[in-house]
Image (cartoon, rainbow, N blue to C red; front, side):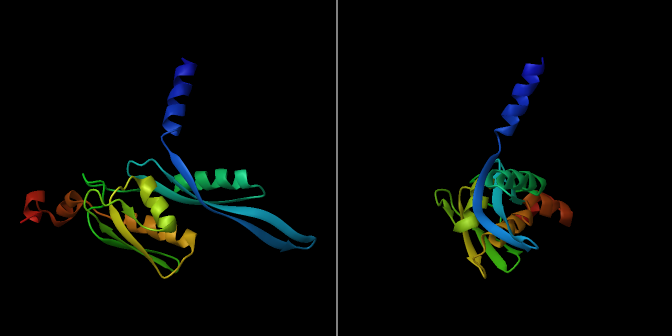
Length: 172
């Protein structure tokens, strides 16, 4: 029975994908000289509408990536996907000095985005989208801006519920 339970958790864990966006060697000046450590920016997603951006710092690369994955799972965002594996409506997001603009696209378009935004969208499960990074080229801020934009998405049913009308009246 213990083996069965172990197998199930293993199956659930393998559902998540992780991609390292950037690894930086950072130094801290201390009394004895310079202390080296590594910073890893990691995007975690299940390609079914959940994605998170995490940052980890450690004295070795593997430890930094592991911490980044744990941090990414703490900051998960639910993404409402349409039948065309796109987003329901155009949206903008911001993170630090970076701004990201996203627009839904027709089936067959693919993910048209660059850098860290592309990684976030792919791991969120979005297949057809147009996105543009504005303001900054910083991968961490761009990834956070993309996650912020995806977090602010609303479905038609949510909007209808907020307005107190049926979904059919939204289309009229």
